[in-house]
Amino acid sequence: MNSHAFVQDRPLDFFWFLPTSGDGRYLGSDRGNRQPDNSYMREIAVASDRLGYDGVLLPTGQFCEDSWITAASVAPFTERLRYLVAIRPGVASPAQYARQAAALDRLSHGRLLLNVVVGGEAKELAVDGVGLGHDERYAHADDFLKIWRALMAGESVDFEGDYLWAKGGGQVFPPVQLPHPPLYIGGSSDAAIELATDHVEMYLTWGEPPAQVAEKIERVRAKAREKGRRLRFGIRLHLIVRETATEAWAEANRLISHLTDASIAAAQQRLAAESDSVGQQRMSALHNGRRDRLEVSPNLWAGVGLVRKGAGTALVGDPETVAERIREYQALGIDTVIASGYPHLEEAYRVAELLFPALGHTVGDRGRAGPQQPEGGHAGFASESGIGAGAAR
Ligand SMILES: Cc1cc2nc3c(=O)[nH]c(=O)nc-3n(C[C@H](O)[C@H](O)[C@H](O)COP(=O)(O)O)c2cc1C
Image (tube, rainbow, N blue to C red):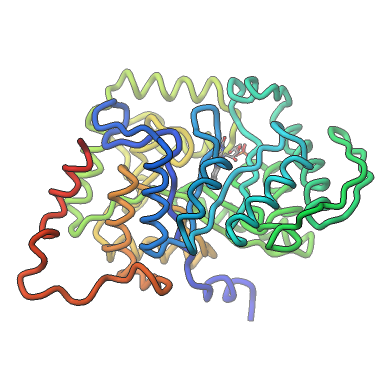
């Protein structure tokens, strides 16, 4: 059995997203916006749990509610859902992050996953007092992870690196997942791939067209092979799934219907000026700020990235077609999808109801559709659009 076959045979892990910087119905408009207050985050987490999502990603950054506090506060209301929260090596010591990770892993009964984020925006990094250049941030993260991993495993350290030092240790309270909760990373630069292949289990990419994802996966695999390691792969994208392709594309256009050429140009200029992220450059290059060529490969739409940094593409279409596109990524070695859609509560339901059956995504013992509806359906739940409209107020 080669490694490729192994990865493809693995059932898909399907994650959703907690929008801790806010949610809404339109990009680039205040209309229909929702604050990321804790009760709303809990609603999405509870829904994701019962619908059969395997986990949720919590982003990190200047404009996000803190991902650790959020995960810790909602985890007790969920049973199976895993929480992918970020470690940012520049903002706290490895020992502090080790204590936090062990505590959250115990509190959630072993449902913690960690996303290593070095950051890519000078302005945001400056707030954290991080002034290192791009590759230095990854070298610093290497020091950080060496100390953090040793401490998580309960070892004492005597480490002096180029950026960090630590002495002593022996973690008092161990995590549930030993030697430590799984590490994920998303970064497209050579420095990111070097770090990934030294330390992490899961390499994440934003939703680029399959050919570009294939090239990236091959680069990571080759580097990992040199080190005698094998990684898993995940993809982060938005989804716009409707019963028909026509409805799905209409929804995609509606989502960006309040954007103007000026707001797109301003967002793109800001990103170009402030970000040194190779991953971000690859996302921005897909559309180059142009609204007329957004389907960058079949059913892959770059409209979200016109004004949103990070994950900028969505798979758009009817359930069977989107499932087929996801299978194309799976065939490349992707075994984890981290998806989202606006607004995140309603779209969590829509994706689970329309796409999971088409994908054959199996749900644990909860969240299955109820018994067959009586003839004529349940009057109270007949109108999905009615429920959505209510929630928007
Ligand atoms: C799935 C995924 C999730 C990410 N989440 C965050 C995040 O929450 N906050 C952040 O600042 N950067 C995030 N990033 C960005 C990267 O972690 C990284 O900092 C950035 O892309 C710079 O690395 P690069 O130049 O190697 O691409 C994410 C990237 C990916 C692929």
